[in-house]
Length: 193
Image (cartoon, helix red, strand yellow):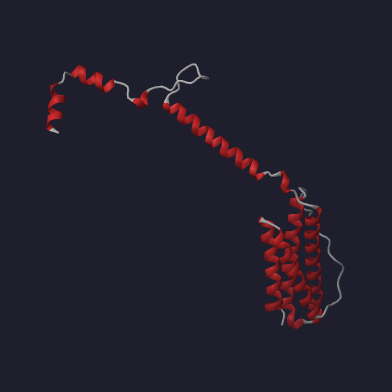
């Protein structure tokens, strides 16, 4: 190590500067057939990075807008039927409150949750159809009070149907239907005696 230092000290200053200024392998320019001026290593890396970033962005953009992912009329009909059943269950629960005041709190929760389910399904249907959701919802006519067993059977049917439909969907829609199915199960077991 000391021999090198001594040799460097003995070299004239001009010789050291020339050696330090000599181009290394990474300073050489890349010659290309489509560019008239040489392309530096840094510029080549910038171009490669930009191309990779552009390709990634293009892939993400086209992946998010798959035209083959359009909703079929059967899917929309199934969602519409689920919304109709949710509104029916909410109306039945509200009508039953008068006949069963001891279950008024539980029936009120069922009515509120099933109304929320219907609203969420209506919003999903409107989103899929690319139309803004309507600000007015159709309220079913006042229903006659139904027996608790009938309401429980309706909720069980809605649970099964929403669960089956959730298995055929993906993404947000599958989660929404799975949540509706789970809520109907909880309403039967927890809220109704």
